[in-house]
Length: 205
Image (cartoon, rainbow, N blue to C red; front, side, top):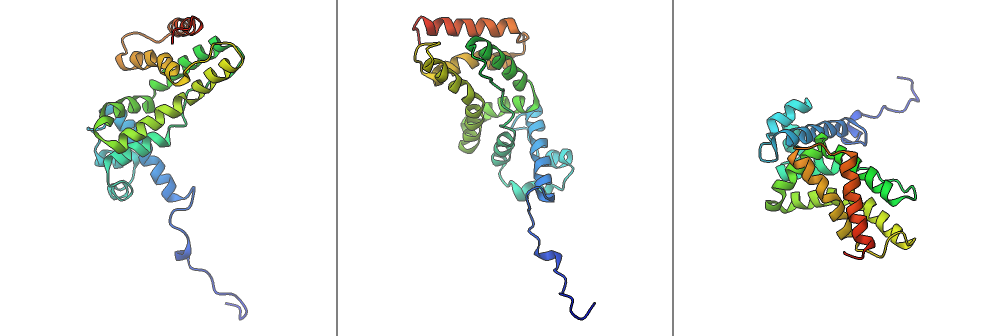
């Protein structure tokens, strides 16, 4: 080493969990695997051994980060909560709501959507999991509530309880996704939207 050279820094000084580092990638794989397995087997059927195998990590990595299964499932749901059905304000409320319902139906048929449905069943007996499920549902539907509020402000519809109307609008989509007996088509989405909007304009809710 040259006489005036500074001593090299040791690698031990690096943070263990840098954003985008190895630990973040491991966590991401674990959460993705958890989502897939919950969608397939439900919350009660989730096994850490299977999560580790599917994620390609050591089982201890799962236990170390999530000693409680409900926390693992909750974090998996929240990690993918941004996969919300989009809603665009085109100026035509009917069109916007129809497109939203079609996108929501598509999301609910995905692994994260199926995992959310499974977690919803298990949530009432676990407060932490119930909170995560409620957060995901709330995030998915927030844009619709805002769209109803903006439509009321511009006079497109009368003033409404946007929370109530959004639940009324989205509820049938969850039933279709859960029962899987009939496809959720554009015609179905249009019928739902037309019934809801007719009720609003008649002052029913």
